[in-house]
Image 1 (cartoon, rainbow, N blue to C red):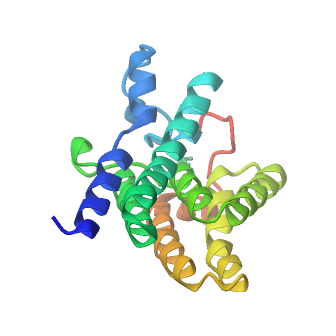
Image 2 (image 1 turned 90 degrees about the vertical axis):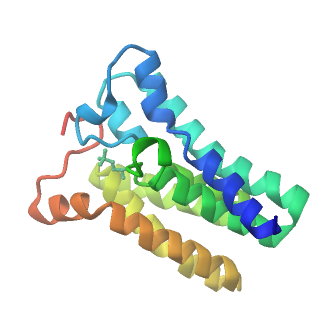
Length: 195
Ligand code: G3P
């Protein structure tokens, strides 16, 4: 098996573990896809009012990206690490277990970015927190931070990472199309509200 197929596959399998769906189901809250925005991510788990479950979702969805990158990087090298990151992101967005209807990718994006370039990963988090503090929109915060990430990587001459994260940003934006139209109409729910 060529190493790049293996790296993509390892990433995909790890990335497709839907932490938000699992922890809410285990906690007896039913199907998170029937609640709020219907998304399986941290923001929507927060709408159940269970902050600890939201925290576990954030950690799990981020760490699966981090683990995919670091694990394959250690055994198969830096090229494989990037492919595993791509695989993990695609696994989260399009998991086979959920008929390819997965999450919007924000936590997993952060986990992958922290593993590939931790200073830019921290910069992403700072931008996210700033926009969230000012606007209280989770989706807008992720849209802004993911838009700026490839440019920040390019400024530090990390061109290959800029291209890969740029591709992930495009996928993240596509997955947020409903949020984008709600933001434009002014009907997007704010963090913590039931929206
Ligand atoms: O983490 C995804 C976030 O950007 C939007 O989530 O549930 O408000 O659609 P949601």
